[in-house]
Image (cartoon, rainbow, N blue to C red; front, top):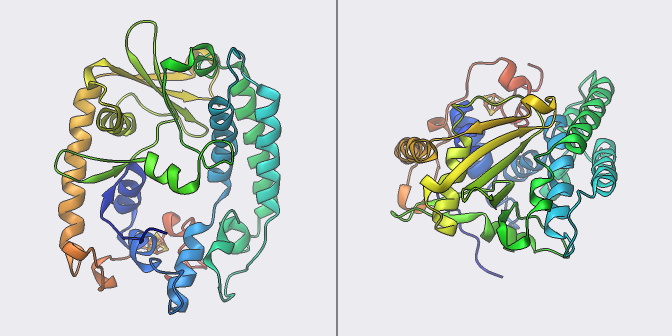
Length: 327
Ligand code: SF4
């Protein structure tokens, strides 16, 4: 087994957590690190457990993304249609399995942080309206499945020959790849050696000669200025060597009607440059908070301040560790 190393790395989601709350970033990447070792503290194990929790929005997203990615990976030669019923069945099974999980309640000790995996934060924290929210999330899942069924964009990865599919979101599956292979697939480095992680849903070479990045969205609508696809473009450029000028991006919203379902994102070379600036800023700011930047050590939690109590804390899965479970 290879040695685990807590390396400094950038990804769109890491950057989002960092911008939202420095303390949440600390719990995610430092406070929970080492939860698996025999001498891990109760706080490390609890942070690892809370990190592994899901929530209803995330569950709806993964219940769509994962079966769709598996279907694309395992497409049989000559298969050109979307296996919608198979995807929908797997999505519903995944959703229903997770909404019932109730392994731990707030205040419980944690011996194995992995027991948090898949359990809803809403159940862990005992949200009074959890059953009502599960019903709403189930409706959202069905609306997304209907959007997927009608989507011309969901047909694209199935309509193209396998050699045009340059990238499909890596997914750990007995017939596809192991969890560590998934991890490696999502990783690359910039020219200066900085490690970045990325995982666009689909990258396909189109008949127009451009390389198209498709990103499935199961929630809010994205704006054309959104830089997330710029981050994916930078990742694909480094991972596959595709020139940025040859890429186009598309956010595909399964909740939106057909005519508004896709938001085209262009000027990806400019957006990738802006993302590169974000990475430099992130590394500079994070490095100043570390007690030992070369070893990536964060031994002073106070350098990762908490935000003011409010709606972000009320949805945060680490709120037990911050003493804000009741906000
Ligand atoms: S509870 Fe609030 S302060 Fe604590 S990590 Fe979460 S968002 Fe940050």
